[in-house]
Length: 138
Image 1 (cartoon, rainbow, N blue to C red):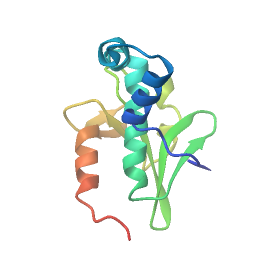
Image 2: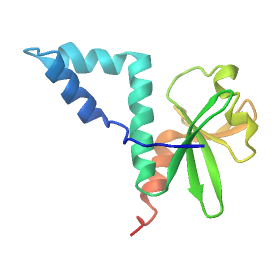
Image 3: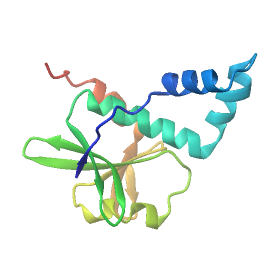
């Protein structure tokens, strides 16, 4: 596991820097809307936002092996691997690494909890809501 050394840029910072680098009379229409409509960019922004939220409650890492796991939370005496997917369709090759962990979960763009390729999944907004119900560490 490798530590997440630098904080992930939340969407506000991403859009502010992008607007500064690419000045426009209407940055919302010319930069923000196209970025949030692009599946690649919105996936990255969602992943950065989720990681930033979890970092407030847990020590966080990511796993880089044959594949990658987006987030590994240090919980008690172990870790909990999470894959963050904000897409309509998941490919088996994208889930190859998370499938190696019996306690792995997928936080997905879905409305119902379930199994994706045998891996437990839950709606990403629900996972964040549950996270916010926990007391923050001192």
